[in-house]
Length: 567
Image (tube, rainbow, N blue to C red; front, side, top):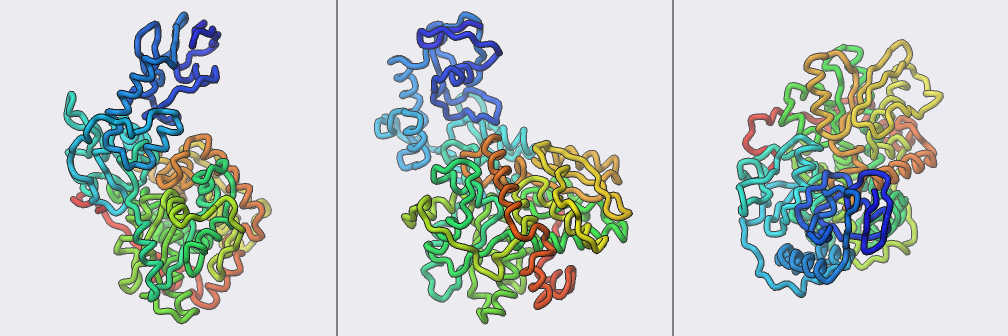
């Protein structure tokens, strides 16, 4: 097709949207509601251009032969400015919105003429997610994520005509809906109308309390995505800069959640072997993703018996810090504060569950998303890019490659197979890379032979795919022996607490970095981690022991009929 853009002729061979065609031609058009991983709906109007003299949104309209497109003119700039004035009247103090304006070379909010719109109060009913309707521009990104990607439908459009707005199912508070806390809505919200419930000020306050021993742990994926918040390319490994920043902030110890992941594998592989021997409650389904667990409790309680009883890695490590580490260091567990830095919003709710306590003491006290962590670093005026590199603290800072690959979908399965093989045969795998578990497919089915046992495996990511596989299991109950389910696209690497730079492309780069990092580690199987071996020898005794069950295992319950889901 032959089209004209800004008085220059282009030949476009394939059918594209106006926005895509302009981008291909090196012409930038500002966007707000548009997201490359979602279906464009053209709701905000910022991307409008003139087509044959008429305004048209460029993100959701296809090019046609002979189109005459104008992307910049006095008329278009005035049009965009008026939209910003309407949208931005509630954002004078919103840093994220101002940054977007600067990035897109759009007029500053100081030029706004309209008074803020008044709406209902902020919905602060959940542990993990906040909804601020005054900041909503009705772009629909959050609804697409909740409806199409996760099939949860906790948020949708409500009311009609000019009263239409984004709301919750039946106008309930979010805690009373089926929201599972995955945070995919917060990841794509361009204005902060839906965001994680921040704990930054709580952390700053607790760090000043001299009576508290404040420690921190960081999830596997943090090291390959945190750098994006400081202008570094996606997939840049910043592990040791991250540790250095945490020490500068004032944490007493900096531990690695990868150690907790190794611990999870030991317990979960043992649990798998026991269930296979007893042929009971199969398939075993992973439980390290709290949004998936919430989904199972709410929509599929009949499968709760299939969930692993293992706590997630950061909860396990929290329990070990407050029991083993506290004993070793002669610190009262009640004076230890554990902070987890996670790529996830659902971890905030998970840490508040009553099931995640030992002797009425929470395993983990606070959870920060990666976005919050970046803000905390900036609050302390730390020059992150130029930091000197430092190592994690031991004894809970040494981890294996198996712990590292927890960050990506299939990583838990691959790690578990490495250790399950050892437990079933007492022999090490010759080739520990189980590539069949890797890849971007949302539903992967494969088999692996361990000794005389053939295990049928399923690797799932996103809750839409989880729903598909669970409906299938209702009919074909014996199709799988072991299933890994992660709520977010490609697993934690695409989690709801990740930087907002997250797209399909950035996820690929982060995954590549994780597997590259894994190959550099001295130990690549959880059961070969010497610090894990030491922990069992000195404290836990053996996997699935009485003390292991007390500290590292938990239970779940049917929430399908509960009025409060996760408030």
